[in-house]
Length: 154
Figure 1 (tube, one colour):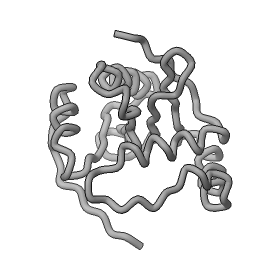
Figure 2 (cartoon, rainbow, N blue to C red):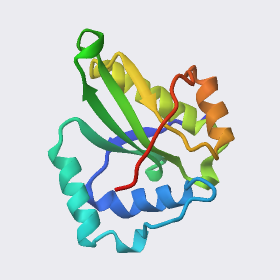
Figure 3 (spheres, one colour):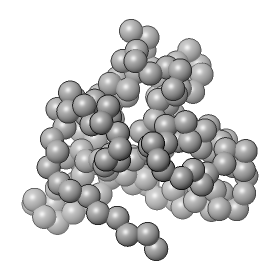
């Protein structure tokens, strides 16, 4: 299996993150993003906020120097559980033409180790109900379906 290399994303990666996100969009979800508009104020302001938060990080997964995946990782510090920190995983994407080679599993094992290194005692994520393949993927990695998620658009 080819080895991924992980690096922190930079502002110059916004279009790549958007393209990966759009390509991995859950079935039936409306696509509101545009990788060709990465330099618009909305995306730039969002990047500023991410960059200013030391607990919020994007990473790019590269294969032979080419971006093939991305993931956003947030350390959430809490009081409950004797001050347990959690690693919140968002925006997990492997480029469509690279799926099925074990790269997603390799990325998630890297994510789990990142959480350990940051002192997190739990890794958590959500996955759209319309993605049974993703659910099996996370099941196979040892994740438990422990909660029902709720969202409210504002």
